[in-house]
Length: 193
Length: 249
Image 1 (cartoon, rainbow over the protein chains, first blue to last red):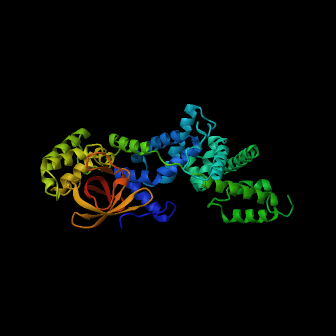
Image 2: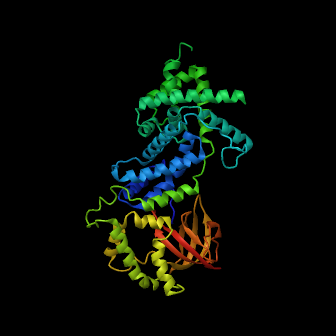
Image 3: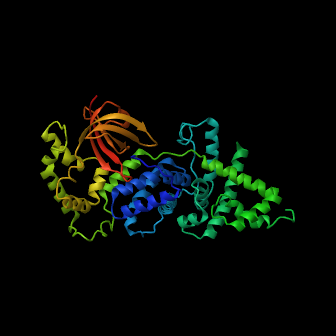
């Protein structure tokens, strides 16, 4: 059997991550390319949730993976790959947002009025997705990040603390405020529709 | 809030926000459950949170732009990260990495002719020799990555083998496509030839070259094609195609 598919959340996947990290740290580019294959989808979608711009998310994903590649040799053996990659991606996004002063979200619709580049879905689903994105975009990045990591990516508060470099208590507080802000923004959007 | 509820709405609010947190401990779960039993307001709130979670989870995902993949692999090929190779202290390292690259090019050119004999049905000697060398340093991003970012390691393997065994790995093998199966983002292609039938992974990084020499795509791979194939060992022990040159059908 050539290909082996293992979920990221299962125990064997952690072992595979450790193996890949170990090889990549020694300069095995094939191992890093495998890391890229395993994580690019999650990272680019996390970034998209933070910056709400498809092209910018792609640029930041590229920057993030290159940063990770360069930093890998300096990391310890106990590196936890997924939180580490999210942390690099998040920091890259926050820097870009600060640089570009894009604190709030940009228009979701393209010039032609179509949805934000999503794959084909039903009209209702697209409208729903847009509403969720609009609500998400109203959140400051420091609230959007824990909400995305928790609800979208399935990370625990401890893991989010690891990713964001803050205490678990701070994550809990931010998560609570993010949920409230998101709920309010979504409700407001719903009333406007 | 009714007086009989354990905890106050304010005190359980952070727990509501973490309703999906696997790290919620037993005491917190019990407190939350008991509170929810007696508090319709918080029940409504947690239901809203869960609904919004579902909406977030089902948000359509975007795909990585192909340009990003290409750019990442290209940059990997050009970038030697600080510290890489520092752990491989057993073998003496060249002062300047370029020395290793030049030495390797020279070595590959010298044995280019030898690898010809390992490619069962190569058209001409001249073509074979040029493919062996130019292909490695050509436009293939992953081949570049493998060789350029860590030339010393490649050289160590190369000389340690003491033969052309390693050197012949990139040589093209004649094969015929038997079947093509699509998975998430790659194809698993069954080939016959090269002494055995084998399944090989074809990814978007695999160079597909049409019989007329123009670039092809994964969609061009079809059963019945005679091909020349170059592979590397994948992370899971399988073989990943780096280049497939379609010849005839």
